[in-house]
Length: 395
Ligand SMILES: *Cc1c(COP(=O)(O)O)cnc(C)c1O
Image 1 (cartoon, rainbow, N blue to C red):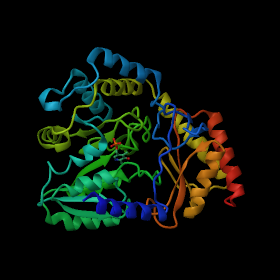
Image 2: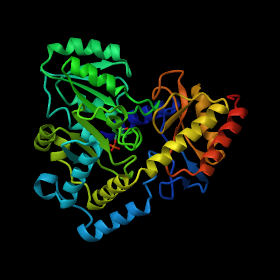
Image 3: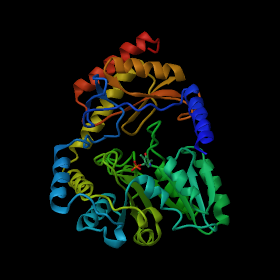
Image 4: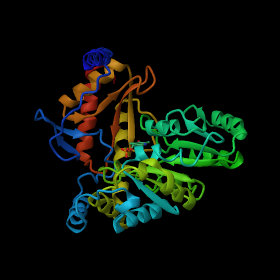
């Protein structure tokens, strides 16, 4: 049988390549950090990691992971409810709940799993899920796994959300679901207005904090701090794979009974392995560090301001952002690819995004700033942007 299937796949792959959509993976031979080396020997400054707080290769985080290996071993070989819960898992769940000021937390192998396992146990065909059109793929998949009625509103469009909420009065329970920060523009969802509408139309609110936690808010504690809406958000999901250390792991945190029900019924939790002690203990160290000091977050914010101010002064068109994501607008798909390739020649690793990842005619280079970037790194990146920008007639 494989012969015909192989032909089919080969044709599909060729079509993907012909459409210019083939994803080639660049191989890195150093830890994830500001300065990386790629397999062809080139060194580059990395501006496309989600390493917002610079913790991916932080000595304290690594030390914590090493200590956990010594004290609690390598793997757990079990799901949580059989024999996969160590004291460390409970401590990390509590630390995340303290950070977000929620009742309780449930850990997952990834935020993809948290989102995949959050809807189906809580809602059924009598209920409504109202989702921002730009929500992450894992939310979309999670919604697909649930029988609830689906509603979708254009990105951050509160009039459309209100219309959805009106129609959804026909359902038993309603939940509005949004990313905290949208990954392509870096804009923060209007959570204050979402919470008011949810109040008015009797809906629950869920925010995926993957790109917002550790970044937005006065001390980086996410959208609740940013909008001062503590107590109004029922469910948060998030990842340990971005600002919080960058290894792996996800979580859902929120109201007590919701988390309790997920522990009973959430399939990616019940039927998938417990996260390893090293990752859990490193996560604990991350939240301890963030409790001790705002320095990393402050540095990241300072870097964002420094970069954007100078890029705008140089004439670049930067999407308004309230996060560590900075979209340098080029509009043209080919230009975005040529620009990114030239940037790598200049020692700057950035990625150009174009349709279908962003709307047609909205191609851009996405720059992700980190606390790990030093002034000299930022200056080098800005210099390269200006040089390549002039060369390609952008500025
Ligand atoms: C990255 C991301 C995820 C997936 O997180 P993982 O822990 O890597 O699975 C989910 N939601 C959003 C909004 C993200 O940006």
